Image (cartoon, rainbow over all chains, first blue to last red):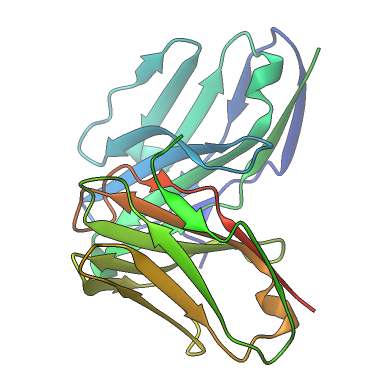
Length: 114
Length: 114
């Protein structure tokens, strides 16, 4: 079973639009960690955020914000006033205590059109 | 620059051959993780080493093996290569013993099997 689902394969937005990338996860552990990584065209994966399962507070970092909802097993990522430099593939990931495993979603390719 | 180095950057080889990918973690990080990124499988966690010992195993094939040396660099050995092994192989490092912390990714090694 897919542990992390990113249903949106590709999204295109016009610059300055807001965009939300969806992430739904599945785990039976009570302690787990969720991540978002960005993979720009250069290919290297860049860490964006980490949340643990006990902290449901939403987080904002500049134009980026994250909404963690345990009730729906979702950890969505919103980019406000998107810019061309935001064009990348974004991966949601889950770290699970059981088996010390790490799962990436299939990624959402975001294109910001100038 | 994440501080994680990987060599070589590109590798082209033939089916049936064996190759070794090398990774040096960030200074101070004791954990090294290996990932495979391919078009059909996405980003998959292969294996983690912590301070020289194997800590977690993901979807790593029996033809693949890894080790971490006393100086903490790691090598991923791929043998009896098949066309389907063509992929981007990432190494990451962190200061955690598990998979629950931020991981810093190297630039990757692109393996092409002909």
